[in-house]
Structures are given as C-alpha cells and as structure tokens.
Image (cartoon, rainbow, N blue to C red; front, side, top):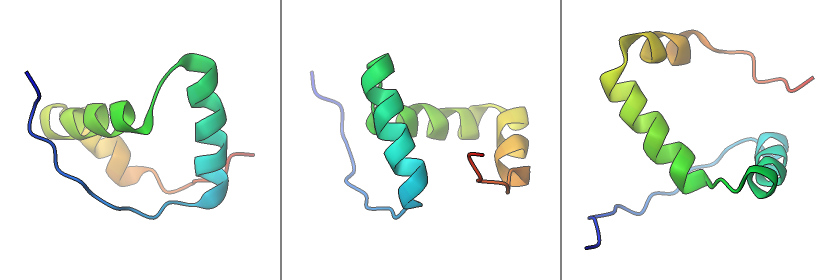
Amino acid sequence: MKKDMTLTSVKIQSELFEEFKIACVRHKFSFQKLADRCVHLYLTDEEFKKQIHNHNNLDLK
C-alpha cells in the first residue's frame, strides 16, 4: 500500500547538501527519510521543535 506523498521543492546550502549526500551513501540514508522523520519529530516532540527553532549556526567546521 502506497502512502499519500506530497512533492516539495526546497533550496538548501550547497555545502550542507554535498556533505549530506556523502553521509547518506555511508549510512544508507536518504533526504526523504530525514525530511519525514524531522517533520514528525517537529510535530510531536516539543524539545526537538525548540532545538530546531534555536539552531542558527549552520557551519560544518
């Protein structure tokens, strides 16, 4: 049974996405899995939501 899905388009920082693609191959993970899980946690976990709202430093170094 296929779940209903919504196609979205987002722009993210190139450096972050390049590093994420490498990590995905290493850990057999996908942007789809990340997006689904993050949205679920955002809607169900108040601490996660606070952490996301307060996280501003996107530097990898």
